[in-house]
Image 1 (spheres, rainbow, N blue to C red):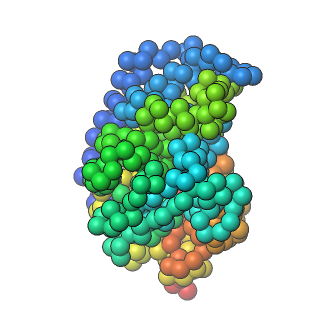
Image 2: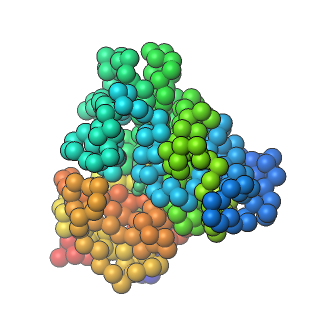
Length: 414
Ligand SMILES: *Cc1c(COP(=O)(O)O)cnc(C)c1O
């Protein structure tokens, strides 16, 4: 590493002391929450024992689900290697809860890209919610990226069964919603229709704050184990936590009606899922430090970053907007070069199932697509925003971002 880069790192970190202390307090709080839950539930190494076949009487699986429910302050949970991704966890939840004639209402604008085909409202998709006669409406965010509260009442009808809230901005150009924002949304929705089921897409949000949406009234939430709650060591899986009656319906959807939560072999996944949850508060803290470092350094060099370097976080997504498509692509390629895995590969924008535009993905990760590891990706569309997230160690993030920035200024200054 060159002298100039070391100076850049030092100068940036000098501005982050107070913030890093705050993150350390957050991590301590969440680590304690998770540790106490392990102890209260008497988690033991027998719970790592794999099951095969039907997976009946899987003690470890049952303990893990109890543990998730405890940590998230909910009644019950489904935590499975058979949930293949965040999208699958969310899809399972929506299909579990909604029936033909019911309506799904998103109050936080357009959902994450891959959910468009789950809903099937834009184009006909076989097996989508729309295909099953479930209707969908969404309330766009206002120009400041805020929920249009005054419209919620008008949009709700006797058919509105599930209200969807997305915590993280995903690939959208809007702020993410804090747990406190979500709390207010839930209170308002419940004041209009007390039996509306509030679902929160919690992807990327876990352990970034002291509370989770289930602590503030969400009925059910879902996320991916190759993001925050897997701490970078869980190789596949997803979770759904929430009210027991709702989890039961999701379980019937995931496995088969009648089998519900009772089946599903865990093979060799249990130990890493327990350990991942234990490590998650710390790893999320590393990524969080990385995202503040990224925002602070890039902002200093004239790039627009959201959230800004001094804003509070509720998720791990840090977006950086580049002046040109070429700059965006080059930065992503440099991040790839700074990865532990496949550093020699050059990512190019290309088609991805579920996305409308070509997407560039720098992901030199141990686990395919694991975005709690340092990754940089985004659809190639204006305003050329790259989403930079994750980092198993803060040190990796600072090295990679600094190198990427330096290589960019080398080429642009020519
Ligand atoms: C990542 C993400 C998803 C989908 O998760 P996958 O595991 O990629 O399918 C959904 N919503 C949000 C907000 C996300 O960040």
